Image (cartoon, rainbow, N blue to C red):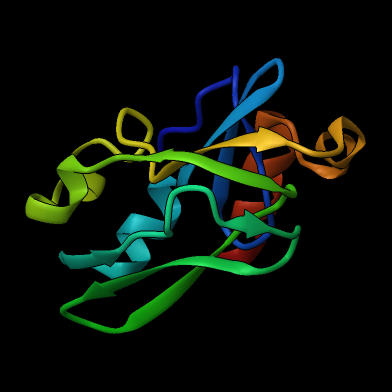
Amino acid sequence: MNIPKQLLYTKDHEWVKDKGEEAYLGITDFAQEQLGDIVFVEMPEVDAEIKSGESFAVIESVKTVSSVFTPVSGRILSVNEELESSPELLNQDPYGNHIAVISLDDRQEMEQLMSAEEYEAFCREQE
């Protein structure tokens, strides 16, 4: 399982890339593996305000439909429009294909996230 060291992680299997005042949000390799072949991604609306813990996107796979939760609060700055026509990109490269970019309301929320090492240990417990 691929767990890049430079990202932060949640117990819901989302990743966050810290870019200062912005954060990139996506799903982990563990998540895409559990979902199976992804066939549709319902993207959030640009400029929408989202709060930590809320669903901001929905992923549909051949197995299930799953909400994606934001671990940090902010405003949606942009979405990865490529996923609208090619949702399978999340299966091919979950870390190279973010779902959304948000402006951060509260940087302290980042302190609640897991490091790569902590997330790896968490995933081992899940298996």
